[in-house]
Amino acid sequence: MNFELSPLDLHALTQEKTDALLVLVTSAFRPSKDSVSVLIAKAVKSGDLVAKAGQVLDIYRPVGFVCTRIVLMHAGGGGTAEVRKAVTAATTLIKAANPKRVTLCLIQDQTPETVRVALTSLAEASYVYTSTKTKAEGRTIQRVTLLVQDDQKLRCVFDRAVAAIAGIELAKEWGNRPANHATPSHLAQAARALTKFPRIKCEVLGPKEVAKLGMGAFQAVAQGSDEPLRFIVLHYSGAGKASAPAVLVGKGITFDSGGISMKPAAEMDEMKFDMCGAASVLGTFRALAELQPDLNVVGLIPSCENLPSGRSLKPGDVVTSMSGQTIEVLNTDAEGRLVLCDALTYAERFKPRVVLDIATLTGACVIALGAVRSGFFSADETLSAALLAAGESSQDLCWPMPLDEDYADGLKTSFADVANVAGRAGGAITAAKFLQRFAGKCPWAHLDIAGTAWKSGAAKGATGRPVGLLVDYLLALDTRAKTT
Ligand code: BES
Ligand code: MN
Ligand code: ZN
Picture (cartoon, rainbow, N blue to C red):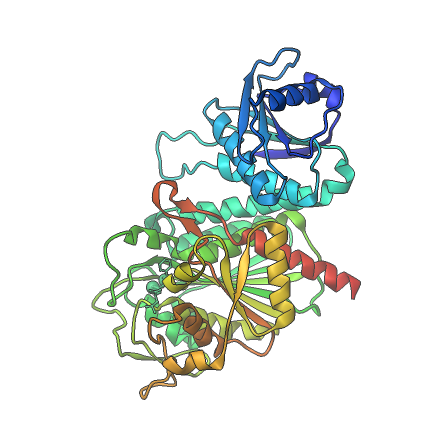
């Protein structure tokens, strides 16, 4: 899908050659004398376009226009959630007609937030997964033209939205692929494929190298599976060597059966999504490839399967992490923290300015925050504020969670330095407390995306979150670096 940005000329809209002209209307709309404005004014006055977010009016072969159809979409007061509702409804509606060219027209509300959310919602609602289907037709939309009055002013936010969409779609693609089509080796290939873009390099470590590094916790999770583990290291080098990188660590469990502490059968298929943290790192690098910002980013992906077998890790086993700390594995289903802890130790060698880990880590986080906001944990106030802000600007929301030392009490054990689980209560927080022991000295945050990385039920599928948030967070680092 290609995107282009063009200046809006209301009087020229009648000549816009497109399969669908989507026009965003808000309550602030004041008609002028052009044909579209007259049409909207009539539709609102007659009540055919209800002034409520998500209401649409589909007008086929409108008289005086060369386009095939106009879809008026109401976004209520024009808030981001309302714009999303409107664009999602209109896109879902036109999808059945297999449009190739779509023109998205922002008549009045032309804020950066509207541009971002309108484009990402259109991409989201028109996305089609095809990789493992033989007869599936992909997305028919080839070109999307965004019309805004001041295209110069909005160029930057437009470029960022388009880059974020490319990243989100890559993350969705890998998230959605079934585990037998998205093994650790496949993820490594996907990472290597990113090296075709400028400034991106990739290194892939296998079982031998990982053993040599002493990543005993990561190895222990992988040992139950016949599929060999991969430790993927991505580099985006947009600044000089002296500039400390931001490190992103993505949980890459390509299937989480729970291991010997096996999960129940219902919905276990959804554990193919347990590599969505890894996919978000790949997606973020895809967006960096588009935007080419002046900063350094390292991506780390510990990837393996968590399966039961005669060689599996067992409850009660004690493993030695790369940091030297021993871990008593009381529950083999708490495997995410085991692969992440070694990656966090590995991250230290880059002397990072910041480390973020992204993981579908706990069912408890789904209970705490649902599918609306990802949870984040950080002891660093500047970092917390930046994550919250990036969530808002990208509309990929997150929310701060606590890290009080008392939450770590349940991780104490007589048989190792730390246990990998505490009780059920506060499960998302105890997981974060476990990880915190392995985070180095630089500012660190953990994002638990268990509730936001994919949707269950009829709309089952990866969301591509939190690529939008990560892109905005990193680009804010870039501008901060330039101004200080
Ligand atoms: N990948 C799961 C977390 C998960 C579960 C995400 C359900 C989304 C939906 C993780 O590896 C896991 O199994 N966590 C356990 C931890 C527990 C054993 C302390 C959980 O949340 O049940
Ligand atoms: Mn698990
Ligand atoms: Zn898991």
